[in-house]
View 1 (cartoon, each protein chain N blue to C red):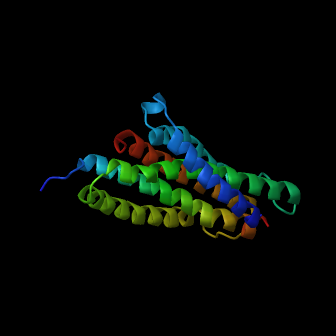
View 2 (view 1 turned 60 degrees about the horizontal axis):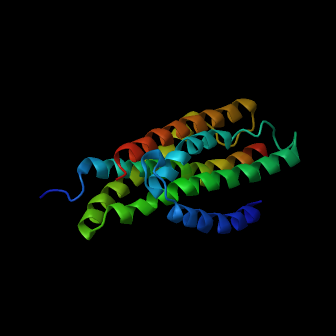
View 3 (view 1 turned 90 degrees about the vertical axis):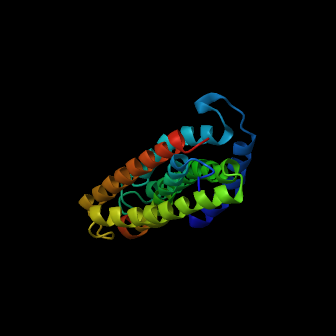
Length: 40
Length: 165
């Protein structure tokens, strides 16, 4: 069975999920901890 | 501040979505989605560091800290939305059939879990106690922001370079 889209492209596209997850997590968790608990 | 940011966000997302849809360019490798991703990748990595740099505590400069907080979360949201919205929109555009989406979806889910683990573990390795209000701990947040920004840049670069058709 062959992949419809090349495996390399699939993996490379999927790697962008890490960008998304890391950025969103920094925003939703770290930033509010930083300003409310640490600076405030 | 959080309410004001939510109001900003209510306009930010649909406006950026419309702009991404209407973009027609041959710059940055061509394509309406890729061009937004290329333009926003470096700002996204940089702002993950600058989220933590108001250069003052609330006790030292309350007005400035609040203004900085509001501006930086709005700016972050704009950049993050422009990048992420374009990236997510590529999924149905690149993977046209159910089978192609199934194959790509599996990789997406695995990487998403991996990304969440990285996002949870890396800050706690760099910042031993998240709530200690000392200058050295503030520097720890700067380092965490920089490291996570670099990770976001590298993975985003791989996505754009080899994962966008």
